[in-house]
Image 1 (cartoon, one colour):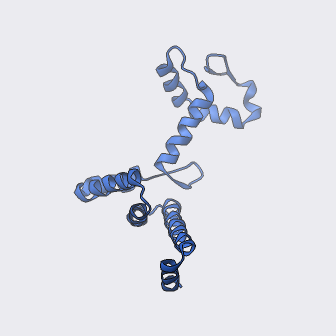
Image 2 (cartoon, helix red, strand yellow; image 1 turned 30 degrees about the horizontal axis):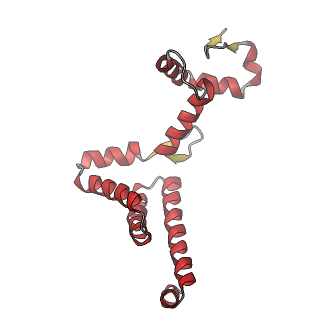
Image 3 (cartoon, helix red, strand yellow; image 1 turned 180 degrees about the horizontal axis):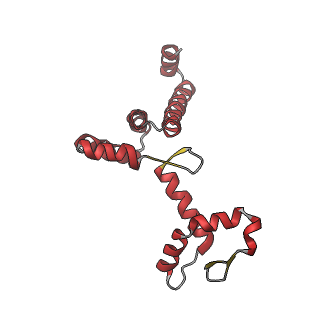
Amino acid sequence: VHDHMLSRAREQDHCMIALIWLHYTAVSDLIRDSERENDPELYRTATKLAMIIYTRSGAPKYIRMCFYCWIWWQTSSEADKVLHDNFFVTKKTASGKTVFFDRFEEWFNRDIREYLGKYQKQNQELLCVRTAMLMKERKQFRMDSTSSDSVTEDNNNNITMK
């Protein structure tokens, strides 16, 4: 099927568009599967394939990003590679699901913004540290409606436990 589509793509533009779209979706699926399976090697393979597609479609910023990651991987020590694969690619959620570290950071930042709002306040750095340190209690407070008698939150985002 692929060879047939390649021959048709040489003749008709819409076949080329469909073929490139299929390649994009296949690479996206590989990246998604690497997250779900916690497989850094699959992720690196998918990024190599993505770099080829980015080159073909003219996406220089993505090419540069993949290229720098690939150079880092080729020049890093074995210890750095082990640390990268085991600590910096994915994290486990409380339910045991693996997610990319970037997504984990986005969720954490979203949770901090949920409590602090989107505008800067006085002592912003201190408020961020307090919010981060009490994140587990804040989430538990939000999920557990029966604990409202024993845990209260004031206007300054301070939690008090009785």
